[in-house]
Length: 110
Length: 115
Image (cartoon, rainbow over all chains, first blue to last red; front, top):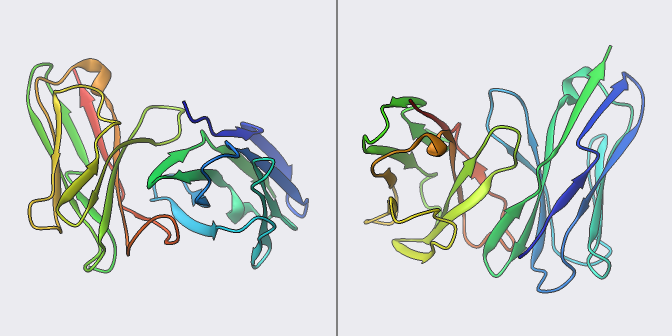
């Protein structure tokens, strides 16, 4: 059974704080790791598709790193803003199957 | 439209009723996925199509669930004899080719409530 775990489950931070969360996944049969951002009442939106060990990707204030050997990815948000409030999902790709974690729910207070 | 669309957005069914959920992927997208999301959980994989071929249906929870994509574009997820445990949000996603390298684009989901 392939297990993808995210921590923490939820996070409350003040505007301006930087934050990070973790996605843990099996280190074997790795194809890709996706990060998605899911705002309430909207569809999940892709943030990053990561395929190589050591990958680091950045989009504005959000960045992610990938370690396929030990099976984890970190997502960082620098200077959180209220509009960053959402659930952040990671998904592990193995043999064309996409397995989601349960997400980290981030709430940023002004 | 530019994105993935799903219909209906909300469906209330009586237990035992059959339902059909529709997904219109982005034009030209080869891969199509169906997911089931229960309250408080991440989306769980149901089935995967590459064009019209259903390559993986290992996530379908029972033989009451059936999905098709006969012409390699629109897909329908059918649930026969619905049960209360089928209540969930059903998400559809498409990607240009393989999700190994391509992000998935999600539809808004269909929220199914079985009474």
